[in-house]
Length: 331
Image (cartoon, rainbow, N blue to C red; front, side):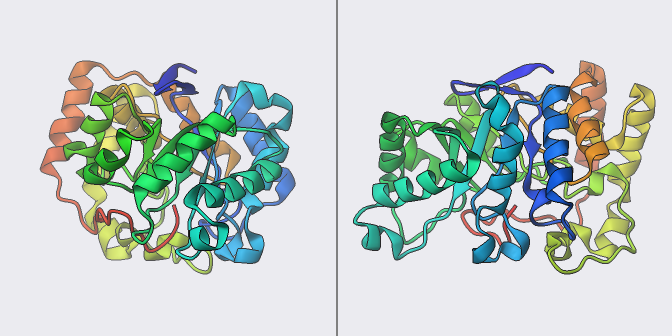
């Protein structure tokens, strides 16, 4: 695996989103299977693992930390060799109850550290911005957590440039985690260039468009229960059928490169930006290793330009909109 920088953090250029072992893609696998899958990813060359305190079956508060516990068990023996990222939400009333935003952050990170079986986190994200809590106070609190030695860097998720500008001069960010794929390219206009200019890593979640770009999702498939794809516009049957030109472009390049559709979609963004480190998520071991193997797929400048020109010609049906600090579900 090759390496990239998220400010001062050195990560494998493809990371692993661990959400699927606890939430988001229907029935979750056994803990034993999940731990084996995470360890297989590590042995494959991945050192960058993403989780969150909120990830648990059906996002039920009593399941808070389910995913962190799995990740902690899987990686405790190789802790010093990996980059752990987790996230927190801040409810409106918490800073008043705790006495300050910093104390709220400290309480959350201490709980995450216990579940992750470590004494520090490499990258700590504000999962979503709460408009009732000034982001400047969050930035100040994150700076104190860095001074405390509890985190090495901090980040924000689903944010725009104005929000980034409000915090960057207080405690510089290590990374931004926003949705980004061939079918969600809105952040190319502002956030991604801003991050490049200010030495902030950009970590795409859903880089394969909820699995659609793999070409392995049946348009007739129905999503139920804890599967967030039932709320993703692109995964509606009519939009999956209308978006087939994306799959045709990917299939043509995949055949040329002896790769899979998913690998081409990841290779495209790795070629396009030097500070991008996607975190595809899957609960299937084979898919996880397939995604990680995308680092071996090297596009030539001509092949990359061919993809860019094709993408510019294809209309997107059911595009997931930039909702700033708000999303209808956790990713």
